[in-house]
Length: 552
Image (cartoon, rainbow, N blue to C red; front, side):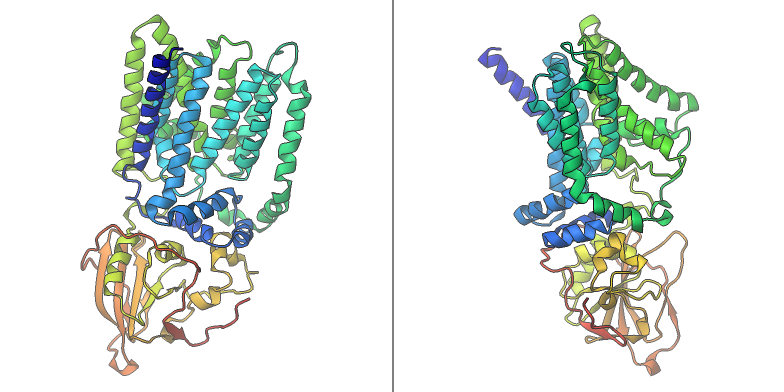
């Protein structure tokens, strides 16, 4: 490779990675920071020992939160900053895909591979979220690259060292990484001899996997504890799988649409074409160890395993499996590369892929899809109503959120000096941390839950005589009865989110019981950002009778 050729190659790679970065940064701050993201940011702002402790009471491992902790120390906790780490890992995945394809084909195919992953809608979607999915996708794709290189050169043990470190990190990022590891084992078991050695009998392979197990061993008691406090309620929100789940997954990966809007033939045809193209790349792989088969296994086996298991307990969630989509553009690029060597149809094939993915990106940027389950956060603009509230906030005002589900998001966008309180159907807090409600994302309420959960609104007292009530209009249209002594002063909404200002009147001044009614008075503007938080709770500018002062 001449110096000029190498420079052109590096510039082309830089252009693809830059495109990936632009696609992931475009409108990255537009969606509201939803519950899971607000949990990530709130947890990552805590000291390291608290991050470990609270994570052990949730359902995920801790690596992402630990990395985000240091990331936020360096770049702050604005929406752009906290989502920026996922943007970085999404772009790194593109670099890995280019390198992976360059080992199996020429540079054109490698660039096509990077281009397809750079614009893959599901990859862009989860590179814009302050969660662990982009990190997990990068780690597993890089681990697959290391295993592929070792399979092609079993005497190069340094690749197994890299593989072991990356897989260990992936297991500490998301438990579904185990399904990618299962795909790796399936590939190694099925591999023919390489240089006179069956990979499954390699001592280095077994030592590597023992090292992975030992590396994960310190977290094993916490994992066991997570199983202990998890019950059926924790997965009740996950829909049951059907025969349409797998083809819908490919539609979501490439177009952010379930494909149900098309006729039945088209719904099945497009995923089958993707599968056929992927198999074509495997069957035409000229290398003895069939490294394309490894990429195929990591792309499809986890989907199949989780789909089959979900007929027993439903755990099939697109974001948990989004890592599987990272290998599919590489397989499609390899197939396009074969066409490139034989016919001009490769241009048409690439154009169709880009148009399809472009439609998916359009759906992403215009927020036409909802991959976060229920409720649909796209219309819940708590950021906007908090921005408006902050303009009118006065010292001594009390802020109460009408359901704990919205609390962490409201807490993130709240920039006033008042701590946000919670009224959750009269529930009381538990500073002991032993109640079932103290686990999962509500673990972050501990040990101040008795201070921030208000069981009786009538006993809430504001030193300024003003109370802000934050809530979300639900599809059921349920009304929340508020105390007689609260007098409506002002209300503004943004989407389904709303903030209402009440003045506390004396009981004699109240004319009738008031109910929480929908109103569209006023509209808040967009653009609120989080502020630095050294502590989870501020001192409330209020009191309520019966509030506990214990802080266990």
